[in-house]
Length: 107
Image (cartoon, rainbow, N blue to C red; front, side, top):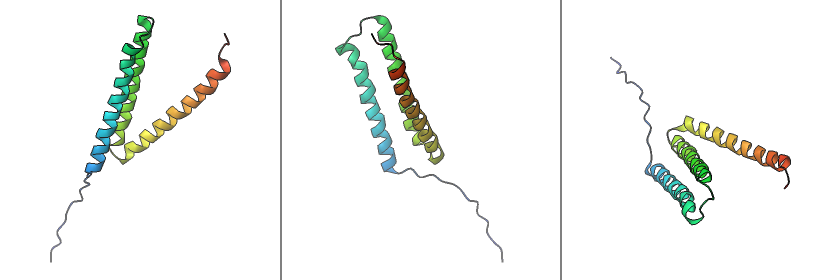
């Protein structure tokens, strides 16, 4: 009597639901950052320096958004990275709120 050995293969199956959610989040990001970019036309900044800063903000925000959305759908271990990143971003934002409210110089 002989035993047949089979190797164990880890196969990840991505559902159509997960793929459609990823597409939806990417399209929502396109609408959000496209809308932000259109505000330059509807409400033009006063100087070219402000335009550069605003476009840099949009580009940086879009990069972070798309990186986190696409990392989330890579795999289960990357979801923990996304959750940790969101926790850090949220904590820093709350710290900045209190810092700016206490250290701002009144006009």
